[in-house]
Length: 96
Image 1: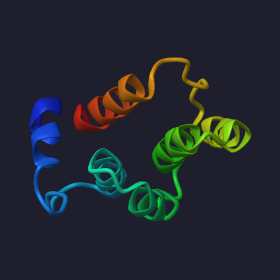
Image 2 (image 1 turned 180 degrees about the vertical axis):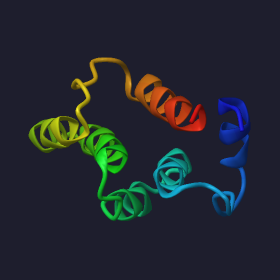
Image 3 (image 1 turned 45 degrees about the vertical axis):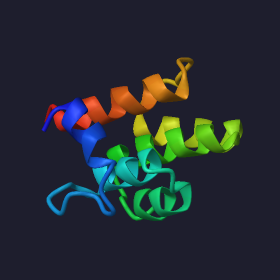
Image 4 (image 1 turned 135 degrees about the horizontal axis):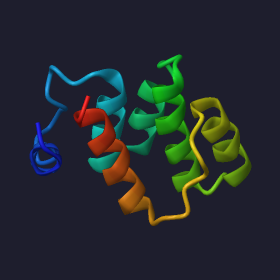
């Protein structure tokens, strides 16, 4: 799946069934449901889940909590726009 295909899937009522949890979380966020995105991300106990969790807390405006999750993800605190970060994380996971 490409980033554009992922973006197009946001028109649906639910994420594609075959998405891993981190991409499900990003799908929910892209679909405008931060709470659903957070629920999914917080249940992913690895650095990938922490990266999505960091992005979500940055989006929420909770910089200190986001910084904690960036450290857990071994990722630098993002300084780009939220849209750019979302696309970068989605692209990174789609490339695997």
